[in-house]
Image 1 (cartoon, helix red, strand yellow):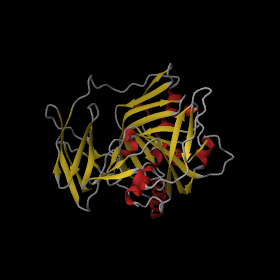
Image 2: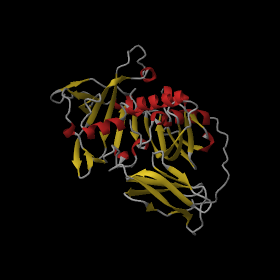
Image 3: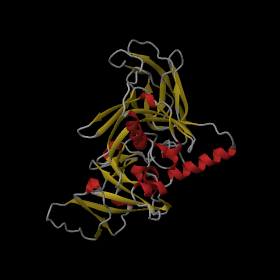
Image 4: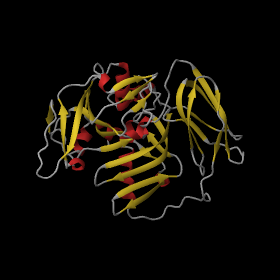
Length: 379
């Protein structure tokens, strides 16, 4: 079975760095009545840059490379604010949070004989199933509330505060503000998105720091972010990527589906797509067939699906075993990308403007929070 995943948490708006200039963002966080909110979280989405407010509601985030960001402000019992912001100089941003409807009450976990099963599913979809995921730990699982529809077999989850995840493989403590989660075990379809803040752990030794740096580089190479940045740089082939067109067509009973010109058939078998047949183009695609410059940004534009192979690393053994290929040797990492809109804008740092308009399948879909890096990460 191939994994099908709508990737949204991994490409939220973040810095489009124009220069090495660094700026400071400061301001206050208050409620609608003007009362300061002490110890509120303010951070730049999916980065290592953030702060908590003082007792008087003030915050300051320094050393921020100039560029475009999403500023996230959160406080328990209040609706989080997500504010797109372009920073080219020092900036003051005062934030007002609205209280959530209803009275804030103590969290009560009701007994549920199926909760452990739901939790295991949730962690597989949210954190992952690879070697790095097996080292991760969800520190506050009681914050997760589940809703299961027995008719559609759809599992939904929500949390009223940050989920805390320890990732000792990459050396990050992740605070993730979950906005939406759904998973359908019957189809393999999953979707979740939210706002993560990465807090680097303090290494116990230089050797541990080197291991983290090595693991972070391994997580980055071959990732969707690496691919997007290599397209912008025009170095995708040198960095190990190839891409071809994949056409997926529905088939009806008794109907013979003709292969498109210059293609071969039979590259995918999946219960999700049992009523379809896929054809892979023989020719590699040039970068200008999928990416165009648009002002200082870029536009992803292609039809059908994009079949991306990263040849400099092999598939993880656990990935092979999950999809019942235990006798196979690890091959190159294969991912499939589809646009849900005619085009998707991307900034100069390789970050998608509308991540919900992009679907990933196969390897990029299998990689989850356990190998996620902050978007200010650079080799």
